[in-house]
Length: 509
Image (tube, rainbow, N blue to C red; front, side):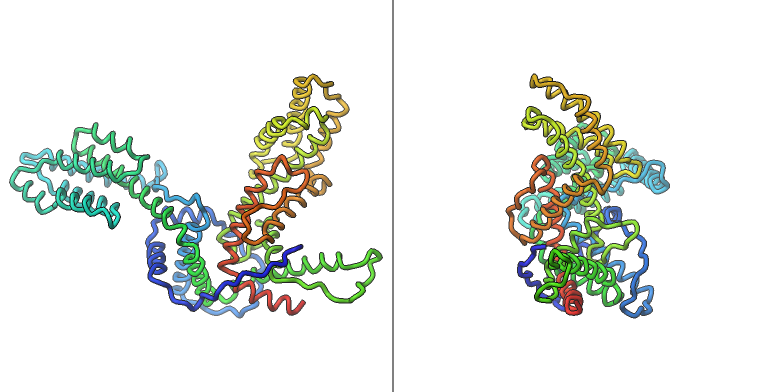
C-alpha cells in the first residue's frame, strides 16, 4: 500500500453547541414524514449482530433512553441520506391496494366529499365545509411562497379572506367558482413545470366537488415538489453542518451504549493485521530469512483506514456484522461490491475475448463496445439469489463466438475456427471460479485502481486505468468516484473515533 499522505485534521465537535441553522436542521429532520423514514429503513439493512465482543461493560438502560436513542439514530440517518445520496427524493405515500389503511381512507374521504356535496346542493347552499377547504388551500399556497413573494402573499391574503368569504356566504353573494378560478391560477404560478399539465386539467372540471377534490390532489403533489426543491437547494450548504450533526448524534448513542464501537475496533484491527502481514512478507529477503535491519514494518493510520474501507468491498454481509460507523451506508457498500464483482467478470470476459480474437476484430472500437453491452445484459441479474454464473458464462460464450464470427465475416477475414471457439468458450467458462488467474488479475487491478484513487486524497483527477481494463474504463471510474466520495464523507464524520482506536492499535503493534 502506498498511502503516505498526511491525514486532514478534523476538529472535535462532540462538545460544541449546535448553531441556529443546525437546530433548524434537527427540527426539520424530527418532523420528517413517514415517507422519508421508510426510504431510509428500506435502504439500510440491519444484519443480525453475531458474536459481539464486550470490550465495554454493559449497563442497564431505561425504555425512555432506548426510545430517545432510536429517535437520534433515525434523525442521523435522515441527515446522512440527504447529504450523501444525490438522488434522494421524497415520494408521495401510496397505500397498497386492498390494504385496510387504504380502505379506511377511501371511506372517510368519500363521507367527507359526500357531505360537501349535500351542503352545496341545499337551497340555499351551506358553505361551512367549503370555507374550511378554502382556508386549508390558502395556508398551503402561502407555505409555497418565499420571503420575497410579497405581492403574491398580498393577493392570496386579499382574495382568500375567510371573514369576507363568510360574510358573502351569509348574504348569498358567494361565487365559489370564482374562488376556484383564482386558486387554480395561483397554483399555475407556483407549481413546478412538471405539474403544468395537471393544473391545466383542473380548468376543465366544472362541478365544484370534483374540482376541489382534484385541487387537493394536485396540491399534495406540489408539496412533494416543494420539499424536493428545498432539499436540492440546501444540500450544498449542509455538508459541514451534517458532519457535526452526525458526529454529535453518534456520540449521544455512544454515551448510552458504550460498546457501539466494538465492531469498528475489530474491523480496524483486522485491517492493521492484514497490512502488517503483507508488509512482513514484502520485507523478507528471497530466502525467507530475517530482514537485515530487524525493524518492524511501520503503518500509518491513513493507510490502515484506506485498507479497511477496501475490505468493506469484499465483506460477507450474511455472516459478519458491519462496523457501526458505516452501518448507515451498508446498502451502498453492498451495491458497490456487487457492481465491482460484475465489473470484474465483464472486464475478464472482454480481456479474454479481445486477446483471443484476431487483430481484425480486437482493433474494431465499436466491436468492444457492442460486446460489452451484450455481456452486461447477460450479467444483469447477478444480484439475484437464483443467478448462476456458470450458466451465464455458457450463454456469454455462445454469444461472444457469434459476435466474433459475425465481425470476421464483415471484415472479410478468415472464419473463426472450431478449435478457437472451443478454447475461447473454455477460457470464459473458467472465469466462474474465483481462483481463475485471469479473473484474479482483473480483480487485483480494479482494487489497485481504487486504492490509488483513495490514497490521492481529494484530488479530482482520476489515476491511469490499469492495463487490460480500457474497455471498462467508464464503469470503473464511475464506481471509483462513488466509492471515494462515500469514504471521504465517512472519514470527515468519524475520523476522531478512528484516530483514537488506531493510536492504541498501532502502539501495540
